[in-house]
Image 1: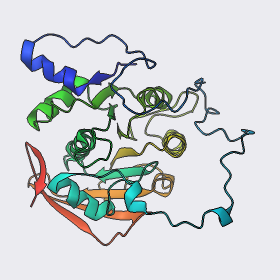
Image 2 (image 1 turned 180 degrees about the horizontal axis):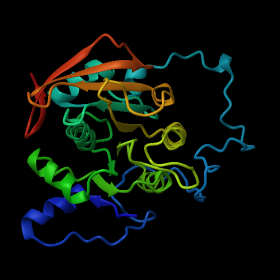
Image 3 (image 1 turned 60 degrees about the vertical axis):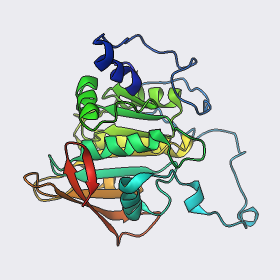
Image 4 (image 1 turned 45 degrees about the horizontal axis):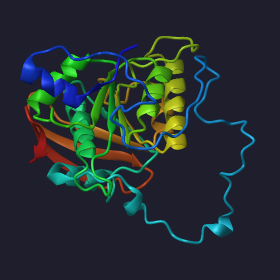
Length: 294
């Protein structure tokens, strides 16, 4: 297990060259999240554990179809992505931004820029430039890179000043989700689905059983808490998303970042979108500073 580290703390490393205070933060205290706690849940680390109480006797969530006669403006319920970069991403995911409670899979070849893209998206959400409530806490969880490596990328991209972006390093799904729920962020990024695992499930982290169970747990968590999760995923040499086919079926949105790692041009394409069209693409140029409009 790791500890949650705020991006603001990482920025201070450049100011005074001191070590980051890595004391474990209390979820009940001030951890940087500005949203209300969505309740606590005792975690049982086994396959049967779920973030969705399937056998709950609480029927308060039932709504009659006849009571839902008022149309919902999906655009007003989305999490906006400000700036020129955000506008180009919104062109692909749908006008208004990311749908709360959705599970978004971002795939691409090694070197395509998935980590850079996701960190940039997390940063603009956390900045909250166009968000009605201002800055929106975001948790970035990595099972592939250390916090120091993410910090170095953030420094290169000039986003260390993003105070509401918190980092966490872990590969166990229940551990990740417990920390995310503690901070009650507006969104969370997990990198990547091929590196995470769930205790009590047989097989290696990249195996079909693990990927299937982990994806199901992430989906239940997103729907229950209304916290959207952006997942990074690897693509095989044949251009197919690594992992079982259930992975693509379980998520709400599948985005692909296309481009040769020897060149800077990148194309963001949606191949599945339950909330919008799959006809649009985003065109970028990737540099040391991140994704810029081409």
